[in-house]
Length: 275
Image 1 (tube, one colour):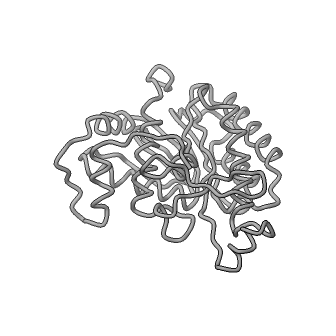
Image 2 (spheres, rainbow, N blue to C red; image 1 turned 60 degrees about the vertical axis):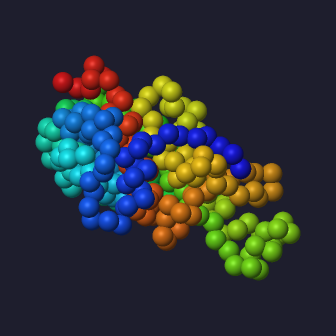
Image 3 (cartoon, rainbow, N blue to C red; image 1 turned 90 degrees about the vertical axis):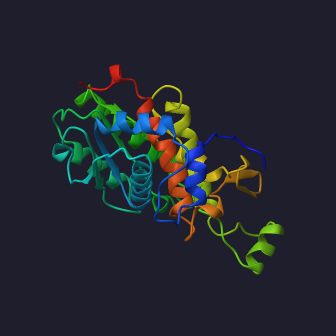
């Protein structure tokens, strides 16, 4: 199915083609990437995440090395530990419990302003099951961010869509799916992720900094959208070539997602960033 096409740079295309190589030099320089990394490297950023977030950070490290713009990425436990000119990140517990993740993200930032320029928290694909109450989760997310905005008026919060997975199924599963008897494994979970992401886009996209990770994961290099149909629902899912295990980003997926992540972070105007 056709979908939204997004533009990638010359360097990124080269990088994806040579991702397994240890030589990250490219014959052409991505000027935008160079400028964006220099801008981000000066900021104080806190990122709460789990394993897919680590995939994004690995992609950032690779892109940083490709254009020789150092960016300080440091694992921390609280926002207070993030020094100026640092992208501090924390593994926010725990997977499969997104409400607890929000609570722990709020605790990690603290009760008093920490002077962060940018902060964000990202859910993982395992935080969504077929039974997830999407509306309740979104309401808790919005309430958490609202509280943190009041405590940290100089900090910009970036909103991130929930990552997707591929759908799987053997011959029997696909036959049942074609006959309308059962969804492919992963369809209902991705449906809940789609529903949550729709609420997030409606509330924040175009209004506040927004990183649409799910859109990137579901958009193939040719611009088409990866999706499955279950009953009357078109469910966007992860492009198989972006993952080796069905959910985490592989070498290709890391670079595609990290490149867009950097663009979003760098697009935040300096006047909006706490000085």
